[in-house]
Image (tube, rainbow, N blue to C red; front, side, top):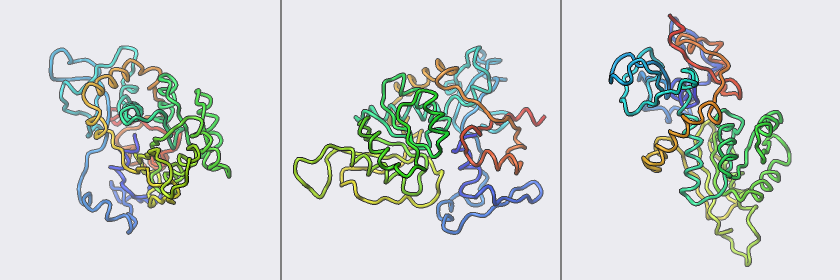
Length: 324
């Protein structure tokens, strides 16, 4: 269960405010967030961005084979897919592991490929102790890409340092701004990917990037000419994004969506990324799950209350066959 799945399943509804009404769960959307979901009201939307299973019918060479795919509507017993869109799983990769082989791995790889395509040399990543964040640490270590990881708890600092991260800063510490600036100065990072979205974090990153630049040869009110970019790709915080414009005028703040990024990167890059994911499925891109639940378990209030918090180490796997 990925945050993108929860976005379809719950939208901006707070999971701790849900109640049961027969077979349905009922929740409220805060009034100020209703405009965001006006096109979603009264619509039934299929959920599940990625999955894996056994081919039961179709092209002969794939029947009986285990495959992984992504593209929506995966929380189901059966899914029709284009044969060219699936990836056959190696014998040593379980079906459960295959179910998480696309969204996080491809997003992490797309961040690095975007960095290269846009002529940056290092990255900043928020909510960095996540499953995706741990993958990004390993990718950057293997590829020699300097990475600044932002977390929000001391134990998450230790987690990432334990898997080889060099630069980890804790946003809960009073000297966070200073630590972030020093880490960015050490790495030269001018591109960030922010999973938080709301609040002041994106602006704090841009400010730190500006402070990390060498002193200007002559004063200008427009700041340095070094381009600084933050892409928001998540909504862990639904509040407005707030920036204090103390970082000059050479900067950008925008959204980052995997499918759009893949289209921009092109078919050749996507094919290379997909091949790497399969080749490193047991290492770089291995996932672990706190619990496996059936489709009915998704609507269990106790379980939903856990996986909807999107906490580190609380990734759930949906197995429809467990309901039978």
